Amino acid sequence: MIRKGIIGGWKLITSGTYAAGAGMWDLTTANAFTGCADLSAYQDGKHLLWASDGTNSLLARISATAPGGEAFGDELHTSANAASDPNGNETDAATGWTGVASTADGTPAMGSYHMIITSVAQYTGAVKAFTVTPGGLYRKSYQAKKGAANVLVVSWDGAYSKELVPVAEFKGTSYGGVTTAYGTARDATWNLLATLSAATSTGYIDNVSLKRVTMPAATGALLLSSTGARGFISKSASFNANAAGSFKVFRIY
Image (tube, rainbow, N blue to C red):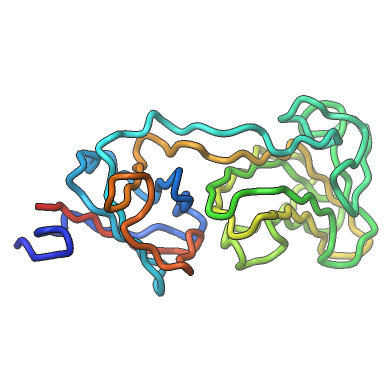
């Protein structure tokens, strides 16, 4: 059934949902895209994408130009410190961090040093602030481990809900693999917080990286406004790109 819509006629083709922290939206007008689902079949210039966070919504054309594959901007963890392995300037220092010390105890995840979080008040800890672009999508990654008798919790902005990116708890005393998450920045400053479950505990964090996503994966989609420029036909100002959401794809006639 073809319905009359704001652009001639339209027909619902598919719909789905995505988890909190997995929407992968870039909401900036100049770089609008989404990786909320595999939209590669709808990149012909004849489809619309509608999405909702449960309260707020957006609407955009899906571009006929397919993404060239996931790409990233420069490394934003540029301070020379014990956890700056991705930037290639690791050193025995805590530059750019608060509430930490650094060491060369022989067991970092990468390189020769890692950050030690110790002797801080319960549920406070090490903070690294990053300057970001509101509405931009970022990939965040790091490695972490705990001391002998505590739990180390790593989150972004130190909140369980602000960015709705899963908070990671580390209960092992050895470094595991790289923990990676995506999130859309809501403010111009993003803080990584590594916090402890007890004031006398110790935790470790290393290999910290933050990069802006400049192109979605090939299964994502570039988004266009009604004029054909990157952007949105309409978007609620309070649309939460990091909340769980639902989407629909419409064919335009």
